[in-house]
Structure formats: C-alpha cells, structure tokens
Amino acid sequence: MFAVAGSRYHGCNRHEGKQVKEFCGEIHYETESGNVHSDVCKHSDGEMSETYRKFLHDCLDEWLRQSNGTGAFWVGDPTYFLDWER
Image (cartoon, rainbow, N blue to C red; front, side, top):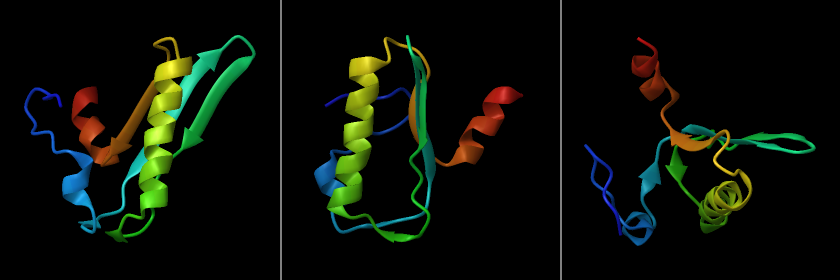
C-alpha cells in the first residue's frame, strides 16, 4: 500500500459493492508507430462492476508497461484539474 500526499489511499476491496459517481479518465502515451489514446469514463452513477474495475486496472498496467513515461493515465473528476491551470 502507498500514500499519496494530501489524500488517503484505500485498498480496492474496501469499495466493493459501493456506489460510485460517474467519472472521467483517459490513457494516453506515445509509441514509435504513433499515439495511443482512449477515454475510460464511467458514464453513470451506481455500483462499479468487477469487469469495469478490472478494465481500469488493465489500462493502468498497460500504461506502466508501454508508455515509457509519456502521456498520462488518470481517472477522476475532470474539474479537479481546472485548479492546476490557474
């Protein structure tokens, strides 16, 4: 387990069966043959399926394996990043 400055990390198993609001996210990185990009948004409030949770973890694993530190992988409230631009 790890901690992110200013936040509290919870293991994924603590969220099983919990309601999750919709959120946005994306995976993006560069390769020698071009860019890889995909939106990974959850478009409805409600329980997150284990299939979708696995999809998000697989996307993060892909970014870690193949991005070579380019681009980004993120999920969350897109308005969170608006404060960074000011």
